[in-house]
Length: 299
Image 1 (tube, rainbow, N blue to C red):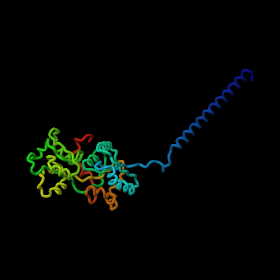
Image 2: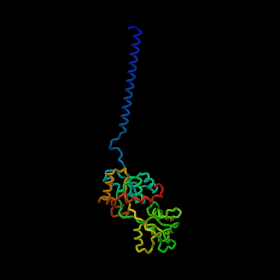
Image 3: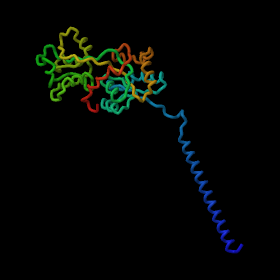
Image 4: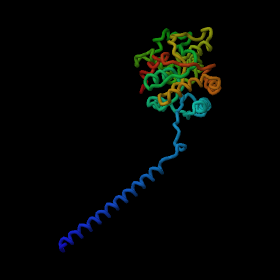
């Protein structure tokens, strides 16, 4: 081998060794980085026992204080958590604005409220009706017996009517009876059905909208008030469940709420709304009630 051939062979061998060393270093570094990545990923993986359980939100309209709401609905959430193995938590909505906004955004998983909201959620939010309070909602529009200014329903336009603030179902029915916004009664908000009736009788307003059952109790002989209109019947308040709750759990909830133990868990609710029991609800009976909300913002 001549000198030039020897140097060329030596130069090639040195470079091969250098390239091999560089590749080995690169592979080692990559492997170390990969191991670090795996260690970091594993460190961020929590054991199954530490993963937060899915929490289902149960709510109802803010018709009472948060404390009273917890007393009424809290036991129901605790009971359903126990019998379904899922976590249900009652949350007071805080205000009617929050309640309606969150409902429209479908943020509630289980809700108990009136038929107009039930109907809307079935049609728009893919909720399933579960159980309801038996009986129908029928409202009457009244005026004082001797009120000569109000000779018929149309005469309430522009006059004061005592009732609950919207979106109460009775008040929405009153507005729906006067579709022309410029020819509607002027609502005078009063809390409590009996207080509404008494305010009208006392002359604080020209008319009142109350449930038919309340009117019959307050004026059984029809001597103090005159009926201007009796509304169509609507089904009672109901529980609905969102599609986020598995179908088998929805069925379980319906069964458990009407069971003997369910009657105990819902006792305060039933006392609040004068219901002896709860019964199964169907989508068909709530089909058209959502129309009451057609002029309400967001619905």
